Length: 284
Ligand SMILES: NC(=O)c1ccc[n+]([C@@H]2O[C@H](COP(=O)([O-])OP(=O)(O)OC[C@H]3O[C@@H](n4cnc5c(N)ncnc54)[C@H](OP(=O)(O)O)[C@@H]3O)[C@@H](O)[C@H]2O)c1
Image (tube, helix red, strand yellow):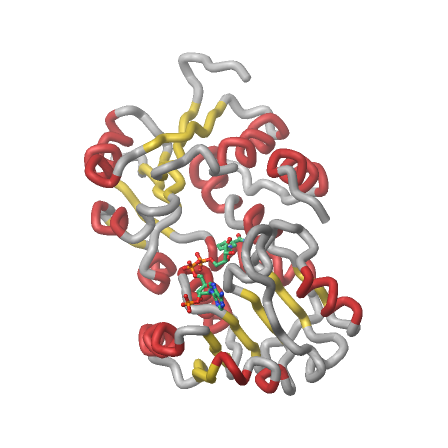
């Protein structure tokens, strides 16, 4: 890595921030495209978030990624929010515009859908989708599915009230809430199942889900990417479903930020996947 007087710099703000793989991810593309650029981790405490964000244009930053716990608060410091950031109610990418103003956007919706289309090109939004979870990830998933015209989204969460609040946020009749205990039955006729809970992640409880009603050919998308091949994906594959792992979403969601800060729309290729698998120490 070489830093010159011309180096284009972007950041990743979080508290803590050391776990973020944004510098490595963007670093791969910067090298691949021969761009004199850098993405640096910025450990920003909540009480200094506003000062840090407002300092980006003065420091000549192109922008910054934003991670936990700042994604909601940072939206209030933006000069403008993209439609998707408003839809999701969270900002994960800041772009410093040429005149020094700040635009906040959210690239999770793009990342979720781009990876779905790349991994399961035959998937059609006509049949119901089942979404497990009602946190920030589920919010992005539902926004993406509604944008793509999915007519029925069955939303199930351990804490039903959170699912109801999320459905109310969208106010769309396509989103229907069911009891967490009915998750096996909810799979009937579905063409897509998305796990947007943290269940199945290394160190967390497993996802207890009977797949008897899962039809062959159903797309099963697990947002959990550690391990890469979760128990859900392995069981779904055995039943003839199309498995889609969570790592691809992480990679694709970085594309719009890279393009806005550095120019090219970067390609998610095997080299990038391998780079991140190694960097994250992921196992299959
Ligand atoms: N691949 C990607 O790019 C990507 C992007 C974002 C997130 N993710 C992953 O998606 C997952 C969710 O992230 P998030 O930000 O939405 O987290 P979050 O806001 O903390 O939500 C966690 C969800 O998991 C549910 N949950 C947790 N423990 C449970 C249990 N024992 N039984 C049943 N449900 C349980 C929660 O249900 P309650 O509401 O009942 O607590 C909630 O719906 C994480 O694994 C995260 O790593 C991946």
